[in-house]
Amino acid sequence: MKNYLLPFLLVFLFVKCSCNPDENPINDPIAGLEELEITFKAVNEFKPLKQLQECQDIQSEKCRGAIQQLRAKVSNVLKKEFSLDIDKNKLLIKLYSGEVSVLISGLDQAGKDELVQKVNSKPSQFGSSNSIDIQGRRPMMQAAYIEQGRRPMMQEQLRYDANEGTSEFIQLIRSNESTFPDKDSRVWIIDTGIDNKHPDINSVIDSLSISFAKNSSDAFDDDSGHGTFIAGIIGANSSVTSQTDYHMNGVYPGAKMVSVKVFDKQLNTTDKRVELALEHVLLNGNPGDIVNLSLGKPANGQNLCATGKISQAIQDLVDAGIYVVMSAGNEAEPSEDNFPGCINYSNNGVQTFTVGSVEGGISGQPYFYSFFSNYDNSETDRIIDFVEPGEYIFTTAPTPAGSEPLYTLVSGTSFSAAIFSGILYHDTQVGVLDSLQRGAAPGDPDPTYIIGKVY
Image 1 (cartoon, rainbow, N blue to C red):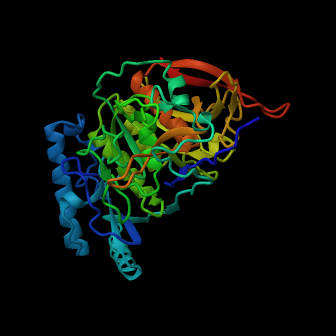
Image 2 (image 1 turned 180 degrees about the vertical axis):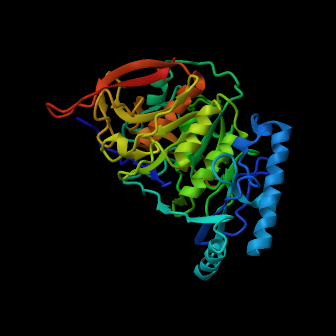
Image 3 (image 1 turned 90 degrees about the horizontal axis):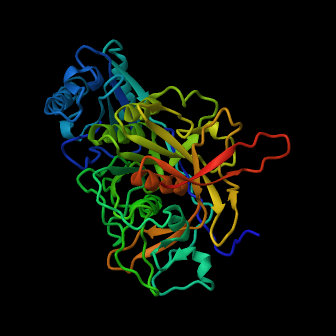
């Protein structure tokens, strides 16, 4: 019988769905409720980086120079044509593929209407599109944060391994791996921010972290906790072991992580801001890096999995040698309708991964497919690449300055994806812990799912 003694967190952030490579973090120059994306149609004058010979190597000095020139040109046009005086280094600009575009925010409705009118008056030069505001899904249930000195009635309720200072599920996935050498690769966590004040989260790269969230310029301000939960699972690192105090070690303790914040305090974001986040990774990432996207939205029959700007941005990342890990979704529905997890793309051995959730596996328990996890309809049309533990995962929680470190238990495919990102950080060759079927009704398709582990 399943144990429901403790409430748990089911968090799966839904978004519908350029960057400044030289100065971080970028503060949104104008913060407000209304925003508009302006595209530049004069392709010869505003060529995206993908079409520039000097940007075949994005990290080259020539390409960095081209980026600054393009930023300056866009800034000048905005001032001349639309009376918008925005510093080139504070532009929320996308400039890698497709049309060069810039996101203008902080507009009241009258100001937005006036700007649209100006853009529409020169249709051969400019275009515009609205951002779509998306509300992040709130926790269905959430355990109170766990303080030092607080013990459960039964130790197994926390699924906490006091000897290793980690979740029992993470210790299982790590296959008793005990050496974690320093690596150059990074995990880019596109989420709600990461609380880097938590003592167990000590490997976040400040210089690359950035916020694209509305009204929130601090990439380390995590009001909801979701990004901090993710970071703890992937790379929390505590050298202290104790039978009396809690600590947290992730799947790969000390994994280098970058906070790319897209959600504001109300768990709102827009498609444009997620696109900006993905391009920030592309312009600053290296082959072998990993993007953790524990977020998504229903595709609602739209062809988002194969087309659209977010789909193209994810393909660009894979083409650049960067792995993208996505959660399968928590609706207990076919995974083909979950975007961007429905994207399957690979190039030269690098690929996207979509991860579902399982429960069980510790203390000799069998594995069960999580009741909330999205699933595949057939063996031939696979979306989900792996499944990982996603229920009652012990991890770090945002901690106020001067307080003892806090922890919590979380559940959801968001955290299954985080576990897989940690596995991938170990080695791009993934081991097999076990396999299972979901247990579909008689006559319904019931694909076999692989539980990945550290190789």
